[in-house]
Length: 353
Image (cartoon, rainbow, N blue to C red):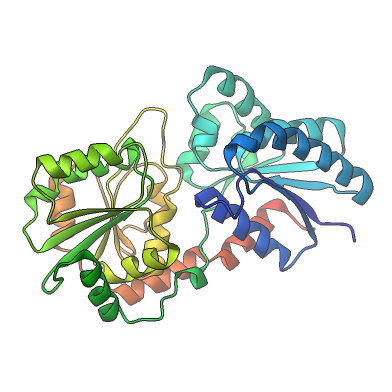
């Protein structure tokens, strides 16, 4: 059977990450309604050196043998593959741009990737900020569309009640959670996430009823850990490192507020902020910096609140006055970002099959 569309992704399960989750769900949901083919890499990034030529040659074979006419690239890094295929065959090539795949600070990368993206047929951007970054690099605005990242609610179910989850969490941390409010951050610890800033500037000004749990690893882990020790916050700030998806879900349900305190780092943008909709899918309201793609991931005043980046008083005020209804937050996030809806938006932008 002739496939409607060929997907190419260099980030795919069993690897774990935001791009992997995006690629899997996009391809999975398209497969419910269309005949598809896929060329994907589920191995570590060191395998990219062979995957790129492999993807190119396998795509050529599928074009010739199965008469493939549509190709979608799951991130901008693959734009050169798409450009070559479009140059030599009668195919339509689209791409999703996430953020760093268009802003990566490297002269050679910027000299090659944005011009290749500009020569593709349709560019889907996960946020308005990502769209702006594309246009700023010479990509025609009329080729771009904004479609947010999606979420699969089934991935965020737990079998226990919120109260039971808090009891289990208290036991694992070795503390009591009675009368406590839990602030939670989940994500890779890199400077732009602003976790070090939040620990230094905000947490010390909250009273002892607030606990801050940090899930994730990354280059800033040691820096944050050192700040916790220096400020004597060991009984209030807990760095949990990497956790299982099951534990992540328990934490999202057990917590009171999700924190995304991003700061500006030149050349490193938050393309969307998928952690915000993961939290919202569990009914957890978000307080996030009013920067970049977070403006699209947080529906201000409805699923959370946006605060000026680096504004200590702004974060403190919102944390102390958080009053959003968890059921309403969850309903709105699912209604807006469910992959069923997001895949329909892709269908509309990519055109009739």
